[in-house]
Image (tube, rainbow, N blue to C red; front, side):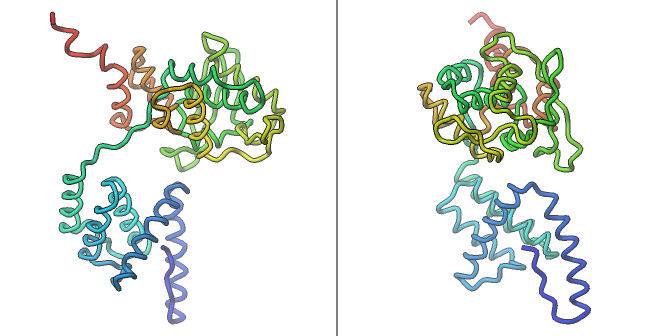
Length: 321
């Protein structure tokens, strides 16, 4: 999306300047976001070329027609994401983006209205389903790893990418529990990092600190990635770190083994939403929840808080029904 084709010597020099700027612009986005945008942009390019429309720069009419065609087969959220990718491609290539054109906006608003925009939310892994999942884990290396991953992921309110990125050097065990240093996360792409504290659990079988210690000792991990693959048979630990997609698979597999009726609705986000929901239900303040999860916008965490307190803060509790 950043290619600039020079035609003269002066163009070549200017193109190099543009490439440097575009490289920094690309680095402003997380790798996962870049991959998603690249895939979405390729879909738009393929659609344009099949109809002999110009894709870069694209006209507002071309973008609007693409959105309308896509809306026949995709959800409104997918259409919106493709629109973001088109905007991004125009932005980093130095072209005026057509996505802010009033006509494009009207078409997108119409798609949202016609198709609805309620997002599918991951099932929150609150304490009861979490305990059910933990009870199914085997007592081999893969089971010890999964126990540590589920409990640390829940206690830290981790996004799956940040959980997989943890290295042994990022963990400091202290008398109260452990400090974890998160080097980079979705809301912290500049690398300054942040630290969170995880205290000892009240119950040994659900304590994230003890679970992580047991896994590190059993796997003989003193340096490098904390969460790694385990060879088939559960006896050998691999050197490479788990990919974020593995977190979702581990959670879904544990939910299915536990016989949870909504097992298919669990995802890599379930641990994070589970902590926020359970903490809100237990009376934690909004700021305390955000400090642990790393949310920077209270609006993002409010949906978990509302769900966690939907009965305790219910208006019906104030009346003599």
